Length: 270
Ligand code: DGL
Image (spheres, rainbow, N blue to C red):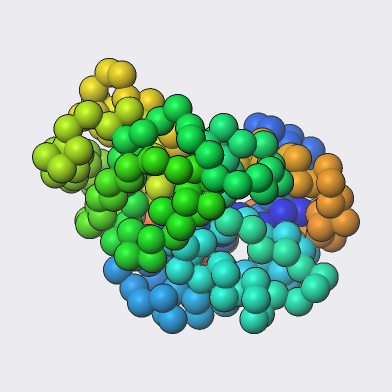
């Protein structure tokens, strides 16, 4: 049994860390498409093709269920994958919905009409491609009314993280938060809508200031995956071994992953 976790690069490791803690007996195969990161500046068509190729590789590892631990892929490609490409005996899930359910105080599968929720002013930080899809606003509108969302496309942050340049990534975070605050001075909640951003979460929290609740996806996705596997145990595939695969240079990727995760991570070539 194994479950696949996909990201364009290092960001999905934040989700992997949480799912491994939540489901210690399940082997996970991680796929980082580091050679093609960042996805956030690519076209939806391009993102679709790259994400399908990575998903197929994870299926070949015996992972019938693949988690897209990448908001950009989930926002730009998941719907198309699910409706035109994924065969009935496989599943591909995204990381968006658990986050929106938490923000809108809903349990999984609660499809009741949209209603008022506690938060009214939400700052969304995501890649330019994710912001352009407006997928977050759409999912939110299905569940909540009267929530004002201000989205900030955070150009450059994923690239800086993928280059291992924490100082640049943190400087860019501060400038994106400042830009957002000029348009929405007092957000009550902030969504880190890119799985790379928890790697620089401290910079986000400090720039946002106290009193802003920061939502990031890792633990929410872990809970939701545990729940899913309980309901659909048949989607734990036949794979038996945890592995870290990358399309990039395994040595360089391992060293950056170890730097950001603050523990040793060893990647191999796909
Ligand atoms: N971690 C991806 C996400 O959640 C980053 C996308 C990118 O490569 O730009 O959106």
